[in-house]
Image (tube, rainbow, N blue to C red; front, top):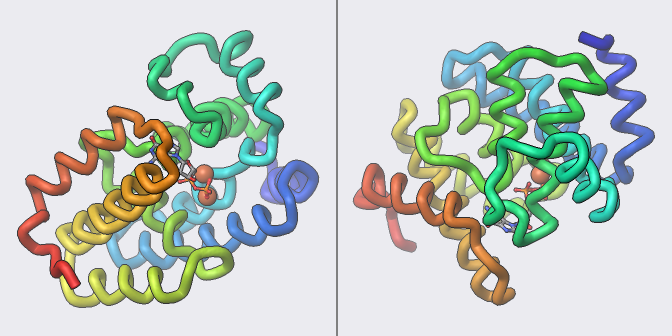
Length: 202
Ligand code: DGI
Ligand code: FE
Ligand code: FE
């Protein structure tokens, strides 16, 4: 693996200041969540730090890397909204550019946007950290998620919090009349069946 210094300077060069700060906030939040759910804190910090490494690539560059370099391992339904490309490309860039070969980190980066059914605990931590980091996410929303985690100890709380995130994302996509990846709907249904009854509909 390349050094942290190398990774940080790559991120500084390739991300906007706002996105770089989001990544730092996400890394800190992921580390904290990893501590709560008994996962490797340093690994969580690193995965979250690099999760959006391809976020500020142009759509043209993203599609070019997808079609010419990555080629397989994604569905056409994942290519309907360019906003989701950076997760697939990010998982590729961290391997190629940062020489990260840890499958947990690669999976967490790959799945941090549309999600997937049967996510690992580590995937869930990075997914949630991305949605509740303090530097760019709305405080009212992050407080609500932390309340859920405090009230519901163990992985069940994480699943309830994720369900809230998926509900918010789906609502926002519908409001903007955007396509929703089937994977996102599948995760929503999986969580709805699993913890839907625990959700306090405020
Ligand atoms: O990269 P971030 O802004 O930190 O967060 P993200 O990777 O979760 O979000 C990327 C964007 O992708 C967000 O505006 C919602 C959008 N998006 C587009 N289509 C889908 C989608 N998100 C999900 N979950 N599912 C979709 O089908
Ligand atoms: Fe992202
Ligand atoms: Fe992000």
